[in-house]
Image (cartoon, rainbow over all chains, first blue to last red):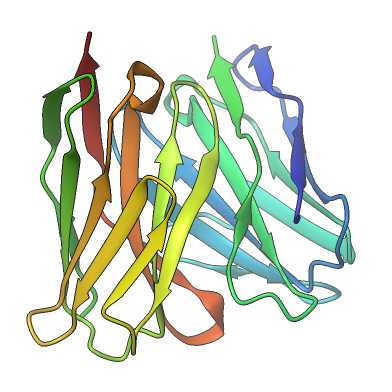
Length: 115
Length: 110
């Protein structure tokens, strides 16, 4: 299989703090990782694409200084939501591909609640 | 442009077949996927079909692809209550990028 994990699964933080979400590929080397955001009852919205060792490519309308993405190794990418506000509350899902795989494998998601 | 559309909601009785439909616009798609999302969970890859295939069957799941009409469907035979979830179709383009439909919420009544 191709297993992708995320940590934490759920986080509640105060407005103004920063939150880091980890995405790991457990049994394959992920040359590319994707970060999505999902609002309730909506589809996934791609935020950014990151290739290992390179800067992330952000989709239009996504603030790169607010959503910091680091993909420092072939098995780990992190998303840091800086100075979080209540409107950043959402479900964040990562996915990974690589190692000859021709599809994305998704993590279980992280629910962020900003109070 | 890229646009993937699905109906929002489908309700069936347990034991019946469910058919979830999807239309897409980009004829250069290489693969088309069906994902299942249960409440509060990530996406689970159910099945996929290569764009030069018409049909793929995997146990209770049958995928039909009409490339001319750019129409994709997922049939679930003998639908169970555990099949209740949101189903997303997606098309893949270059670099394994995915474009998702809006999702179809399947409700299975006992």
